[in-house]
Length: 58
Image 1: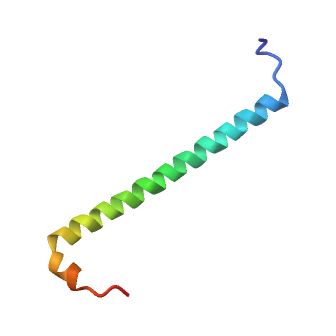
Image 2: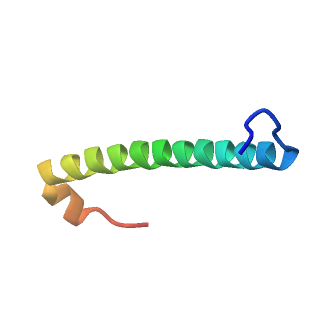
Image 3: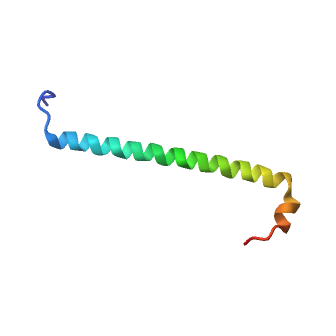
C-alpha cells in the first residue's frame, strides 16, 4: 500500500469519519448536559417530595 498516492475517495471517507466523530461528540455533550440537568432536578425533587407530589402536571 502506497501512502503517497491518495485518492479522493479515501479523502472523502476521512471527511465522513471526521464529520461523524464531530456529530458523536456534540451528541455526547448534549446528553451529558441533559443528564446533569436531570440529575440536579432529581436531587432537588428528593429534597422536597411533598411539593413534587402535590404539584399539578399541566
